[in-house]
Image (cartoon, rainbow, N blue to C red; front, side, top):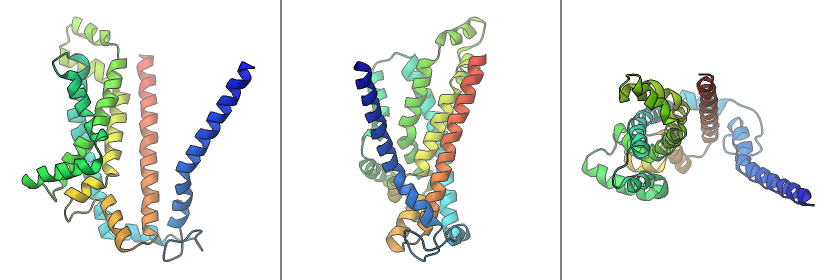
Length: 268
C-alpha cells in the first residue's frame, strides 16, 4: 500500500514537472517557426518558409555592431567577475575574519535586490564618474551583477575540495600560492568554467542595466527592445532564436567540460 502511494506521488510529481517544463518551452515552439516566416510581420502560423529575417540580421551593420558590443561587454564581465569573485570565494572559505558572514551575504545582494533599483543606484554613481555611454562602464556594472554567481559556484567547489591535498603540497615544499595554482585550481576547474559561463550569459542577456548605462550605444538586448517599440517584424524572432541556440550551446559546453574535468580529476 505504501509503495503504491509513493508511486502515485512520484507520477503526480513527474506530471507536474512535465507540465511546467512544457509551459516554459512553449514559447520556443512559436519563436522558431516565426523566425523562418515569409510574412512581412509577426504571424503564427507562418504562411511560408523564408531565410529573409536571418539575412536581414546578418546584413544590417547596426544589428552586428550591437551583437559585437554585447560580446565584448560579456567577455570583459567574465574576466572581471572571475578576477574579483575567485579571490573573494577563497577568502570566504579559507579565512576567518570579523564580518565574514556579512560580506558573504553582501556579495549576494545583486541577485536579491531588483535589477531596476540596482540600475538606478549605479546610474547615479556612474553619472558622477562620467561612465555613462562607455562600454567599460557597462562591463563594470555587469560584473557586480554577475559576481554572486561566481562567488556561489566557486565557493561550493572549494567546500567540496579536500584541503588536505593543498596542505600536502605545502608540506612537500610548495608555497601556498603554488599549491593553489597547481593543486586547488585544477581540482575546482569545473566550478570555474561554470562560473565563467554563467557570468558571460548573465551579461550577454542583460537589458535593464544597459538601458540606463549604454547611452547612445546599443547592446543586443537594448537594440531588440528598441526595435520592438519602434518596428515589430520577424527579425526579432530570428535574433531570439539565435540567442537561444547560442546560450544553449554555452550551457551544454559548460556541462560537458565540467564532466570531462571531473573525470580527469577522479582518474588522478
